[in-house]
Length: 424
Image (cartoon, rainbow, N blue to C red; front, side):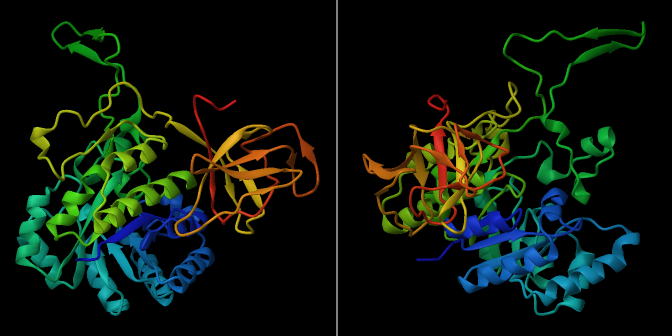
């Protein structure tokens, strides 16, 4: 049976390590404005990115470098230098959007495989063949392309790898080709600085040009004004169909700028979906329960399985972002002895633990608290909140910058979470 890669976002070094520990086969990220996520690029220094590549390679995982922005003439020298600098780190591929940057990368770094970004909008076997002939080894399909179209491309080019998005933010415009942010905010989406104007709430007006009158349009209750706001993609329940097709080489999770909890939980859910399918025990609802714990804009299974004209549920008109069913309370540090608070933690509260892949925990109890199992699920309960400087707190909240002691050892990057309806 074909081995399919799980590809997770790495917005910074911590998220890279979390994705790998929760089961990603590969991660993607960048360090400069040549990446289409400038904010995540700023969170990754060159030295940290180099450390991340070493960390991944030591564990048999891959790192793909995003150089998928659209450069201007005055950036070309910087781009040359950036490609050479990234090539020296020996990543596993470059993700690129334009023919010119493909040519430049082949000239400067001929040994680095090239993956074509979704921004290139490949929809058919003819365009796929063009890029394949230019040296591209993988095409990242647009979110709007159907599985049927990918089957045709694979039939025509069996050696070309195909990567598809299975989870994360959707764009109102086709494959992110949007200028609303550029017009309203001066921030150009295809240079990596989208302000997400599509997520804003808008008030609608009608203008009568003959009389120069302006009318505000009143909307029906609960219809809302988030007219451009796309729901988030969620294809977890369709992973079995995708893998059965035999044409997809990599399942990609969007979200380099999202939280460490998002990086962990989405990777965990899709890792389980792939592994369960291979083992003949696929359970779509199981993965959905996990993904619903993350913040989202509502979910849609989008267009891979169904054609765009068949769908009428891909826009969320009522809100820009919703809380998930859970809040992350904290993240265990790499020493396994402390955690950093991400929400709020009180003594005498049972807090669920989410453990990285292939790691185990041992129940333990001390004067600080206990780690235990309840109905097969691991939990932690604090009797005292003690910092690493021995200061005792009544509670700890997000933004507190000192590590908090654990009652016993836990695997690095273990997530602590509470149901929203039960959190204090």
